[in-house]
Image (cartoon, rainbow, N blue to C red; front, side):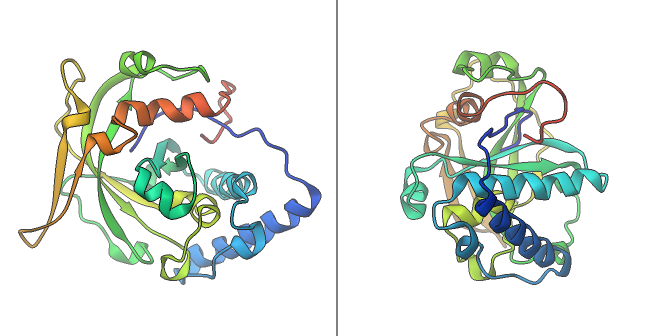
Length: 240
């Protein structure tokens, strides 16, 4: 799910945690550069070290920005209760989307850019104004949304065998790979996204079905979550 939410975790990293963060950054950087999956990073950060995991994500994103990438949005994950139970968490997570991760419907996708890709049906929100308050409401999201697009998220993991805990996926940019955007926009006026469904086909065979109500009851609620959860900075330097 792509947005232009500008959010930031503002939790300090302890000296002991700093060493673990640097080791995790190095491990994930090497995996991405060589396209060779690595061991999970939970041995460094702990099974539930979410704050340090977000610090790893932030440092990896800083390196991408320094190399010339442009942040274009956010991916919101772990919105389904069944998936949260699988990871032993009770809130979603988020990752960052960059310009080189966004593809258009019909655009060829080079599979060799990924390590172990999978596809998920999504709804992408395109905003025409910032969600610039931590206490943003559903009404704020609706007002800020120019339109939504059907999308397919290509999730990918630098962690071998998708052997993940919440710490691993957060550190690894919420297992982000790319997003393919549809080209037909839909305004939200009178559109009940909780009742919108999507079927994914492979070689004309349906392989997956999803519905909007699985996203915390509605995709609109899912977009509201990070704006409520994290402090917003408007200095133009924040990564998410």
